[in-house]
Image (cartoon, rainbow, N blue to C red; front, top):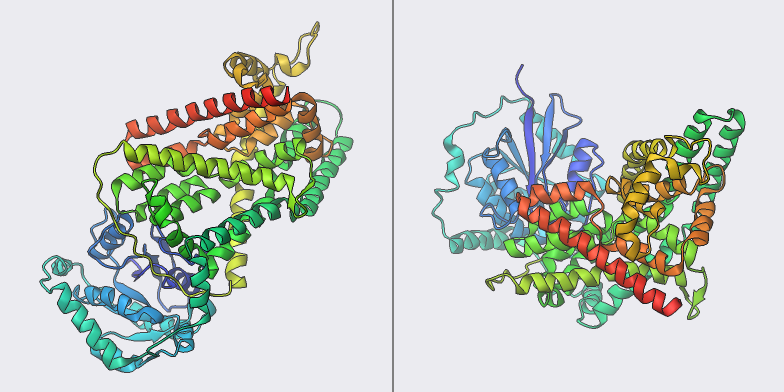
Length: 619
């Protein structure tokens, strides 16, 4: 049986390629309105065709003459040079109608491969709003390729494109031969290529001479060196305020639900090991983490809105100059921003960075961006020790504390990047070239998909990794039981208690007790598990998990200890997945060892300094 025909989407970053992929496959891929979102190609079944077909979503690229690792992936797949990857049979070149000349460069390079190519002229609605008129039929004849006008965000033109692709699917796949070498043998100069593109634009495109619009006036503000930074700072401050203010009612509802579930199950089961396992191991462990889902959804809601509106690319451009003073550039902004969600995709997104030194430095500091897995730990401790009072009439003190933790990670990353850059040789500069996307109202469809994906990823972690770790932790905290002549709580005699007491002398200078040490171990698998670990060792079961655990911590910890624990989680690389992806992306055991040691050392020093300073101030 022959393999299904393979199509591949290829286009510039931010041309709507991923959105078109979603429409053609029904996949729930993340759609973001900034360059570099698709770091690795994705595949899906192309729906609605008479024959089985596969669709690949390749990384965005401006040219087949690559300058970064992600562009190399796209080129290698197209040329059939990626190990274990069959060459696509038909290429779908996605071109932004508002930036036609830029997209035509890639199309003309693809043409030299002598491969079947379909052009999807996307974002036609915005082009018309700008007064841009494109003679699609004549342009198609000139370049010798079929062109379909599309608006991927609302499915316009998708049916026509699918019908055209179906006609290709019914034809036998083209044999793989040496024609892929045509690209490397091409002798046309860049000047000749651009002359050809300019000729096509003059013949087939009519655009207004001046396009001064409201978007330009917004850019004048958000890209201003001073006003733009104030706008960015204000947006971030609003986000952190909302994380606490908006989430509280839903957090209380989830907390009450798990509390009621624990009480109900506890009343139905007889006292014994099974009851303890279900109530304290499963319900308390899962509920202690799941209760923070509303705060994570709110954080991602704002990030998705900023992505879809087109603001994040402008933030990258705005921050290019100050980041160059640190040895980075605006290219590092997107990977670092992604790391606020999770450091793993953030580190993978560094493939968009052409400068090897800048990419290495970005990988080293990406985990200092506070990921969503830290948020449950932050929220728990802040709620337990920081009063929910209003400051200066408009700010919430808890929200300001959360903002300070995020700022500490960012400031530390900036300092470390500056130090690393000064210690590396060479001063080669890679200028930042970014295409500023059109401002758009966020699409509710994309927001709902994005939020559902984030929620499902978190819930899946709760139902797999976090659940498994909670069960292991419950076992360690339960067995062996206390002897008959025990004078201490039973957990002191358990495996977890013994391990915590063994670790405690190492962390005593930080003010950590043995219960806190226990929570650090399962947090290496998933930082969120630190919350359920603390709930287990402090015997929070049938009560309201969030409130009861916060009360237990407030009664057992001093304020300097709480601050020190927060400082530890700001810096510690407590995530095995992150360490593994650093190894994969750097392909260096030495770099991975350095990464792990320097972050743990930084966490230890920061927690020690925080504890000592806070103790001196508070007493």
